[in-house]
Figure 1 (cartoon, helix red, strand yellow):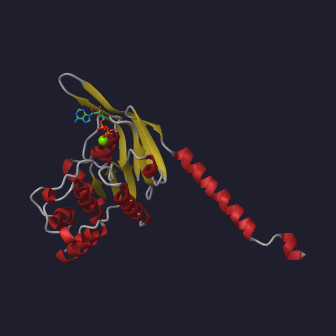
Figure 2 (cartoon, rainbow, N blue to C red):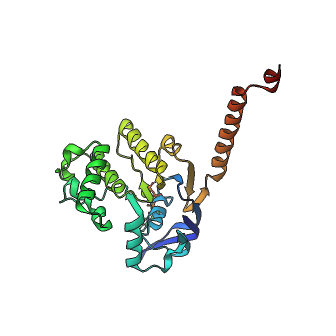
Figure 3 (cartoon, protein in one colour):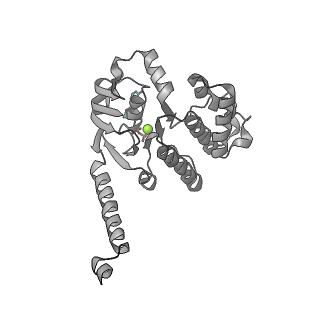
Length: 253
Ligand SMILES: Nc1ncnc2c1ncn2[C@@H]1O[C@H](COP(=O)(O)OP(=O)(O)OP(=O)(O)O)[C@@H](O)[C@H]1O
Ligand SMILES: [Mg+2]
């Protein structure tokens, strides 16, 4: 689904040049659930912004669904984004003068859903994040954690094929973080490909694969660990099957 080869991203100001990404390469398959970890400033948000076509990169090659995205015009990039990609940002990016219902409605309008379908989806996702009773409130009337849940509802309402999440549970207490994580895992089981940045190792564990970033590079793409996990599962299953099956001697004797 996503293929990045030697992506570089350089931010230039008069005083400094920052290499946010360098020789950044990563493959993500359809249906993957990937957690991204790494120190502050290592390039995690930059990677998500480029993956989600919010920012253009300086060098390298990025293909999304087999399409070279550097060749897309701005209008084409936004069309792909609206069709396929959902975002949960580190800052919630809610629109301050729209109530919760209308905030969640924004991407659905872009997608061209009919009013009744939009209403059904909005009520459904606000219910899921526990804010159905607050539909007519403005973001400023909510706590930080509640605003984050609205941002999550907004990202999920369009049932995107590809969900990019930057610290989605960063401002939530552990109980709420777990229920949001379960929601995200469920969306993944329903087929959405997910890339999620997190600082929390126990949340990173919930993904199928962990990618670690250091100094703008992938220092571990998690493939070996994922393979080892699958092997362990396979061996464990064989062992259980063997224990459960009647042995040859038992069957004959
Ligand atoms: N718009 C920008 N202009 C200049 N430098 C930038 C810009 N955005 C990011 N950077 C720099 O690029 C590097 C990577 O930043 P990025 O936001 O991707 O880090 P991060 O891994 O998401 O960190 P955190 O965990 O703190 O969110 C940092 O050194 C940052 O200062
Ligand atoms: Mg960041």
